[in-house]
Length: 588
Image (cartoon, rainbow, N blue to C red; front, top):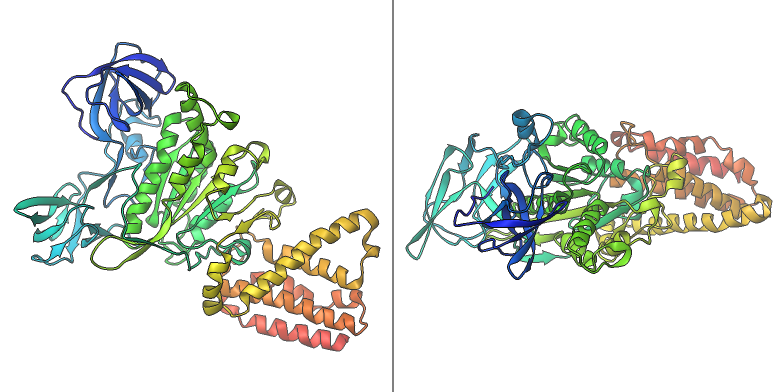
């Protein structure tokens, strides 16, 4: 953490939970980090009124009293960026929890001050920039093999431009000088360690339109409600509807190079599951542990409430740093509702005018600031690099009420809505994403990519399938009122096909070694197969074939079990489609 300004100090006049009011703090500015009390607790200035400043303290404030000193560091809340972030587990203000556990045991000691990155470890720095060339912010000076999956690109810090006059080669710690840049006679020493204020988004040259999907391997998401690389999505749903499992699946299978998972105010046992499970999960592409390309930020509900507010900024700043290297990064925030509740508590203690349900009036703008840091961008630097940061935020509305302020503020910002339904969860249909409520605003912009890389007819098949699912919802209303006998054979066939779409396509077993992931090509073949049966059955019905005989054909069992076909046996879909044509031709 930053060094303390020793040129005097202020003093505490009021303590209200995580909020401390201090007077006469020298040089106090908004969002500066301060040290509070004799224990030097970490806090941040969030309001200035005359000679008084309000401070949100990121640690337990019990025992603090009026008259204790308050020291300003003169620096904003910042994170340390450099080799060593991967595989780390941080709290909301980037203190490494595994290091704290070794020093202080199971509980975080108040006032403990441990840097985010290891100062002793040496990394093998391999230079790639040549002495004598002109470099600018974002240019890559060299690389470090951070983990077996991640090559860390050491960049010139933003705002630094000049001639490279010296560069290091070989082992070095993060604080050691690895390059010297000269501009107008002034030399700037560069180390692998950068600091960046968490509330300030990192610069880039240009934001690009989201034209490429981020496949997740989850059929209901990729086919019906896709997210683009650099896109934003939210997963609202009541307790027990599967938000955390969906985010685990996205972390494991999404087409992203780096995963940043923020446990923001969720229950400790849920975060424990993440901490225990992620090191055991294997990265499906490489077979290495998933933690080799993952950063975890853990700030559970029993940890200081103010640090929840900082945790999402800590996480997204780390994600932006890897985006600037040219990587595709996926950030999972679980959950932004707890972050909003922390805002509400701090706002109440500041005695601000409350908005709807007690949330501050600026809830929407704060949420927008967070989600708008996502995007697919051309990064800083001489060489053209494209990086992407996709953000998926879970929302936990009380009682599953989607009309509450946090959900509504989020929906006004994000482009994808995966609405979880507790009725689907009760029926053991997972992922419990309600296909009649959910939507994706990226669908049309991603269709050209899907036509080129998957199949020209994929978007039309998706539309046809969604029409059948919507027709099912309408027909079910009729069935409840007057019974199934009131339906025509064609309508009953639509119900059967919609049932097949639900049970054989939308349902997906996250714990089955094959069904847990489906490539876009496999999703297309499954969808085409189901709809091919529907079209052939309609043709047979038009030739006076009985519906009961069509539904008893052996090929229907083959269609139901096709989701368990491994990717390498894709040719089996051709055989099933041939059987559909053959069996229905006989039945005509």
